[in-house]
Image (cartoon, rainbow, N blue to C red):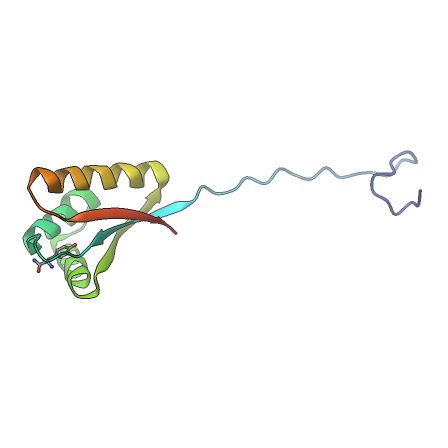
Length: 106
Ligand code: TYC
């Protein structure tokens, strides 16, 4: 075999092992969808209580969802995003609102 083959290690060639590469965990956007029935105040409350927004930012995001159809509440690891989606959807149903929360990989 020729000396240029890195697997031909029988003549004292140093072979560097590949370092295992750790992948960063994927992130997920938690999103709220617009609908015609959920009161604006309720959406603002959800954005403040479950996503830590100020009233001013929550109002801006709610209006963006109202006009554009969808908006991002935050970006989280999979477990955290799934928990937020479940909690928000349960909370909305408890209050008889059709507000829909979902997630998408970034
Ligand atoms: N479109 C709703 C209304 O006019 C308000 C609304 C905003 C609903 C954002 C859902 O994610 C939403 N009452």
